[in-house]
Amino acid sequence: MAAFLLNLFSTKTDSFFMLHTHFVQSIEKILKPEQAVIDGLVSHLETKTYRKGDFLLKADETCRYFYFIEKGLVKLFFDNGDKDFIMTFFAENAFFAELSGFITGQPSKYMIVALEPTEVLRVHKDVIEGLCKKYHTAETLFSKLYSKAPVNMMGRISEMLEDDGKKRYHNFLKQRPDLIQRISLGDLADYIGITQVSLSRIRAQKF
Image (cartoon, rainbow, N blue to C red; front, side, top):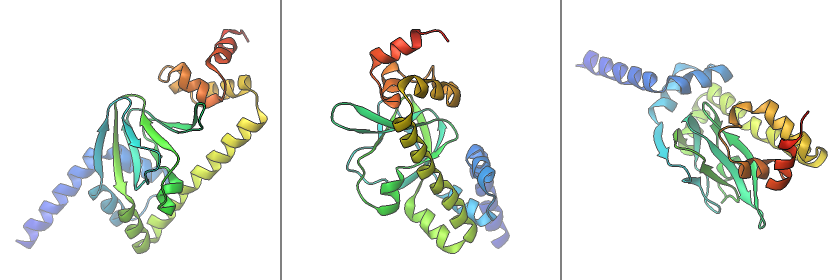
């Protein structure tokens, strides 16, 4: 009986890995933790699907999940009163969360919305914290994941303060060419921080 149960557990775990291959491979590109950490994450993954326009997180909600995009595209943004300010976009194989709320447990001013039909894997904060307390490699893995957000934010702030709209547009073309055909001109203008009219003028210029 014990051998049967062990074999059943092994088969179930293997099936989880087969379903979530991209998730596991993406983790191991960052850090290869011990198998117990992978098992703990994979066994608690939830699959969620969203239609275009659905919110993964609304303003004043608290982000309690860490996400991985299997397919689709989302944006992280906030409403500054006059228009949206888009902090960033997340596409396939990206890990993400609204980290300020996720870490502090406080409601967020940011929102996350699907820009196309999107399928994500998500794991609850409690699961991550439990693994981090038990396994040093889990703590190191998520420290690496969490550290990317402030670095990216500083880059965005620097770009918005130092570069003009034309430079920011060309930076986006170089950094995220995969998204040009997937996002609206309105979202691109909001990300760059200019009007759609100004964006159209920049796009019409020849270089």
